[in-house]
View 1 (tube, rainbow, N blue to C red):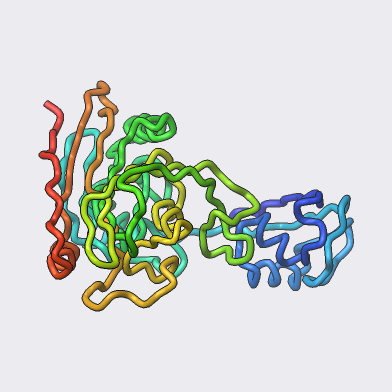
View 2: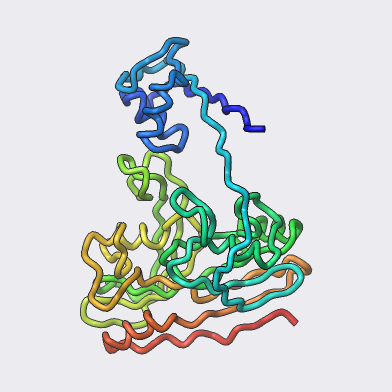
Length: 315
């Protein structure tokens, strides 16, 4: 049986007063502006108990009530998706995700995701459409990802993430020469004030975001850096360094320039993962070497491929 629409209410305050109805609705419901316009056209949106046009300019004190259709997600089916398993036990597994693979189903990516491959391996615990997924990586970002095999492992790992007990270290090639060899970027991140498809430090709804970096090497026009996340906001590394003026090389969304010749993706790799095991808290530390295409690009710049620590699996 289809789920009933979800009724929501937006009380117009100073933060949205003066905005068009469709703009404010898109922001409040976390949907596209086009989808907000369709809700208004369908009569699913009332302003002070009366229908309104999508171009209606909101005034402080007005009440917007709307019915948000419930999503009807497709059933997850097992699919053959290439997975490189770095570590696996009865509680969890750690995957070295290749670039180009989307982690979980989303609009435009109904099949061929990492989750479909995990279902084929019997992973079904935790979040419904994201079974076992404790954290995510962007489509073009390669590297290590923790997956819970069972519900109790999922809950404990999510709690560890919330307590910032899971260490995530990346290797990134940045455009330009960083003025410091090491430092911290502390700049809240949220949806861009005008482009909701992008994250930004220019946002009306900031959330704390902290990134630590250490330069590993330099070449003309580039800095190779090791980057450690303290928080894990969407696109955090890419947004932070783009805001500083040193975007991740090859980043088509935040880089503001064409991709360098010889680089088919953005240069960002989740290289090291450290976390307390959900069974008894023993520390697991794992690494994944740079993929050949990234290592080859570094060599073309005359930069050595960074040597990572040896992985430590739980005993």
